[in-house]
Structure formats: structure tokens, C-alpha cells
Length: 193
Figure 1 (cartoon, rainbow, N blue to C red):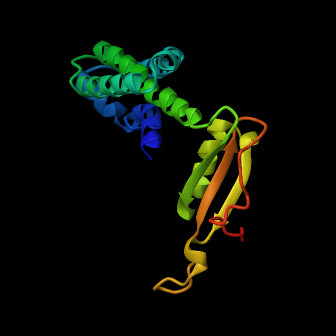
Figure 2 (cartoon, rainbow, N blue to C red; figure 1 turned 180 degrees about the vertical axis):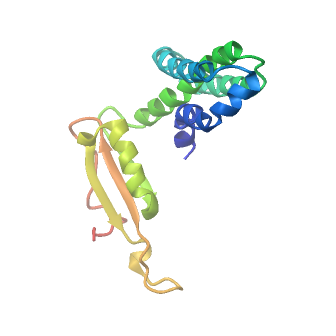
């Protein structure tokens, strides 16, 4: 959940303030085209930030660059709200996009790091989150890395207080290498249905 939220910072930097364009133009006493350039600056920062912060996090580790990027993003976001003019806002939005790119690229790198060089990654999910998680994982790992899913009913399918136990858990399985580590005879797993 945390990595998903961090990954959403970059896109939110773009989408959340689009409806406020007219108000920003009035507040800064500038034209609509000047305000639109702040969007261009943010997207340019997102692009350049991914190119630079990805290799930096490979070299320095994930934690320090991610903390620095999120701290910078927070400070620059506050400064954006205090910008006195459109050119200053453009520069700050570029920095905001650059820092937000750290969240995007490092969160994906952390998820990829969870895959061992020749192993399997298991995502243990509640049934309500499976569809969305699979879409994200297919984009991050590649759909060809999807091994399948195992569905089981916790507690051997026993009835709950409110009636038959319909809730189930799911494992999504992804592999990095050709040989996956997977024991299908594990007694904790129930037969798919």
C-alpha cells in the first residue's frame, strides 16, 4: 500500500491541480498559457528525474534516495503554494516533478528487488484487491512473468458467523528466472475453485 501511494505521487502532481488552472491564472495575474507551462515543467521534471534518480538509487540503495525525494517533494509542494509569479511556479513545478519521479522509479525498483534472481514472488492478497494488484504487477514485472494464482478459503472453508465462508485469499505468483521455486503440495494451500 505504501509503495503504491509513493508510486502515485508523480501522476497526482499532474492530475490534482488541472481543475485549478483558471484560479491559478487569476491568483498569479498571468495568462492561461503561462499556467499550462507549469504542467509542462512538471512532466519534464518527472521524465528527467526518472533518468537520474533510478541509477542513483541503484548505486546508493533505495532508502536514502527515496527519503530525500519525498522530503524534497513535500518542501517544494509547500513552496509551490507560496509562489509569487508564474516563472517561479514553473521552476518549482519542475523540481516537484523531479522529486516526484523518485517515488515513481524507486517504488518500482523496490518491488522488482523483491524478486530473487531465480525465485518466485508471492503476493498474498485479500480477494477484493486481486484484480487491481494483478494489473499493476503485470505492468511492473511483465505479464509473461505471471505463473498463475492459487485461491483458497481460510479455515478450510468453514462457515462464518454471517453464513457460508465466501471470503477467500489469493496468491499471485511471479517469477524472474526460468525456474520458479514453488511447492504446489504445500498443505496450507487449498484447491482452486
